[in-house]
Amino acid sequence: MPRFFFRLTIDNRSVPDTEGTELADLEHAMLEARADCRGVAVEELRFGRAFPVTSKVEVCNEKGEVVHVEWAKDLIPQAASI
Image (cartoon, rainbow, N blue to C red; front, side, top):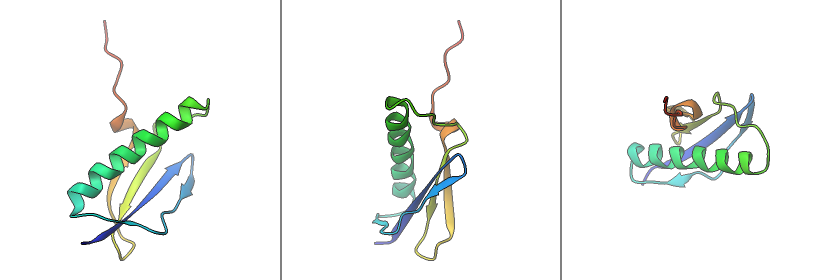
């Protein structure tokens, strides 16, 4: 199984993933990145910290190449207009 690494960036601060996670394929890695991004957003907001919509999770392969990016702005539902 391939190993994927998830690098979180909030306000130009990056948190590297040094261990990685073995997942079946890129599709599963993308789902993991979405869940990670949402989970971090919830924790940041729960403790009163900002979570800018410019935050992102980069999915990297074993070579360190970015193979996918999940942006917070694409994961946070927009308020419905009345």
